[in-house]
Image (cartoon, rainbow, N blue to C red; front, side, top):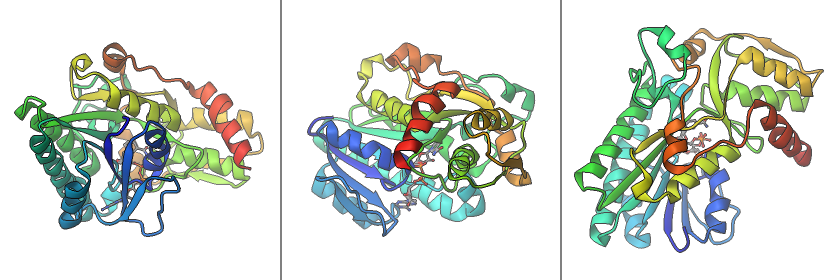
Amino acid sequence: MKNRSVFVTGAGGELGSALLSHLVKAGAKVVALDVNEKYVCPLAGVRTVHGDLCNQNLLQSLFDEHKFDMVFHFAALLSSAAEKNPFLSQKVNVDGTGFLLELAYNAGKERKSPTRFLFPSSIAVYGSADKARLRSPLTEDECLQPETLYGIQKLFTEQVGAYLTRRCSGEYLDFRSLRYPGLISIDTLPTGGTSDYAAEMIHHANDGKAYGCFVSSNSKLPFMTMPDAIAALTSLAEADADKLTRSVYNVRGFSVSAAELREEVLKHFPKAQISFEPVEWRDNVVASWPDDIDDSLAQKDWGWSACHSLETAFTDYFLPGLRKAA
Ligand SMILES: NC(=O)c1ccc[n+]([C@@H]2O[C@H](COP(=O)([O-])OP(=O)(O)OC[C@H]3O[C@@H](n4cnc5c(N)ncnc54)[C@H](O)[C@@H]3O)[C@@H](O)[C@H]2O)c1
């Protein structure tokens, strides 16, 4: 990472803000883009740029000036936001992403060494008419019939990124993607996602506020803590290309139903008031996703292993972090 010229899009979001300090510590030169005018990266040495991923002139001028050789592309409308704003999500998640891939490809071609492109995909790429197939852990190539627009957009980007890398035999573009489960951070609250209920349940319990969970108690999804998500992304970003047998890898921490998560929250916050008030369309989105995913290929190829189980996520990450912030 040292001396790499790195472009981070969506830098003010949950993943972006968690990654930036790692990049700075590792010695990267970072430009942080976000459309949110209120966002300013607090880290010394990071250039904050306010702007829209869809502003092609802005992106071109940033590439011309900084000659990026690594991109972490986080700017997106997340699953629930994309369902509510289908056409805007197409512009950002597909058109904006497509132009960024083009710039990364052309920069690598000009430099004669590949631009490394890290893309956070999602379990939303999965789907199947046979819902029973989604109830056991899925490998990377099973059940890829997403029902949400967000899932379709993520799968499309995974495939375009992999295609462009193959097209140039990895000489200009080195596209690498993680299929994340729901992410839980204690530093930030999620917005716009469908797995947000997990983080919301924990934060409401900690704040002493009642919480009505927007999915049914038996809804089950895989999750991962934010430190594990950052560790997975940076490990993949730094992995030797010859170790990778594919461009897209599953990663997961633990799989849990909303009822089981509630039980775990109650162990640590016995007074928490958590009820289930499912919203049909959001419940349906979760039902179209798998209960769990299989990340054995990431373990085998680049030594991935999550630190946090459900229990240790609470004892070693959520509770100490929430106490520190209080
Ligand atoms: N959080 C999760 O559980 C999760 C799971 C799987 C995949 N992902 C993916 O990881 C990425 C980051 O997720 P996050 O949780 O940090 O999301 P987030 O919503 O917290 O952050 C996204 C950031 O992108 C910015 N943004 C949105 N549209 C933009 C545009 N047109 N131009 C510039 N910036 C724009 C937003 O202002 C926001 O700061 C996304 O691609 C998301 O799909 C997240």
